[in-house]
Amino acid sequence: MTSIWDGIIKAFQLIFSGDPTVYEVTIRSLLISATAVLIAALWSIPIALFLGTRNYRGKLFIKGFFTAMIGLPTVGLGLILFLILSKAGPLGFLHLLYTPTAIILGEAILITPLIIILTTRAIEDVDPEIKNLAKTLGASEAQAAMAVLKEASSGVFLAGIASFNRAVAELGVAQLVGGSIAGLTEVLTTGIALETARGNLELSIAWTTILLAVVFGITLATLVVEAYQRRRK
Image (tube, rainbow, N blue to C red; front, side, top):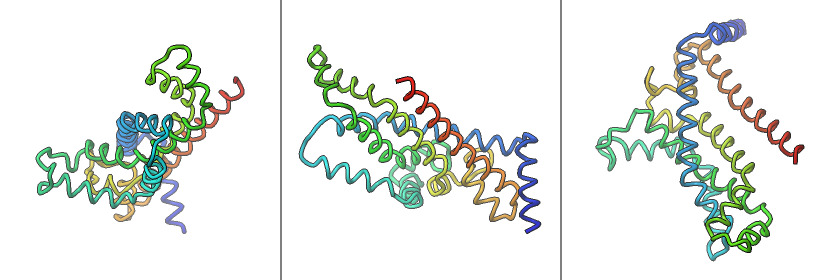
């Protein structure tokens, strides 16, 4: 018990002393996950817009597929990407394995279903009359869809926050395609796993504390902003 408390004390000393390793890994984790969210949004939002504004045969099946994919095990996706990006894989010539780009790609794929489903639900919650009104005023199909998306912007933003939290807290993809290389691909989750295995509890506790602070801090800030916007409305 004493060693655990010693580890916790040393962990906070590392955080507040500005230890370069702690902050380097933290910044890298935030940048990788934020980039993954932005990339995933590029293809996820158009798909969600199509799902949320149109009715057609097979829509329920497609939504069910993406909902099921939210629970995709990260280690399973990491293995698939490892096989694809390895030297013997079809994309091995790109030499992406064990690079930050590989982690970004993996996290973007991982969070795609989450962005699609949450954004689709936000779009479906918008009053259908918004789209009809836009068309009445002369808007094209695309312009009417964008009007609906604008009304669902708060839900889309929350989808982005949830996806970022999912990305920054995942381990399987980052470990298998990133390799946790110090100074290059080591992120918070892989660092926690590696340092715990080495018995370096103070560093793993420090990174765990930062990871929890990031996830809860961003979520809390988002909820506060959302509550403020609702009051203004």
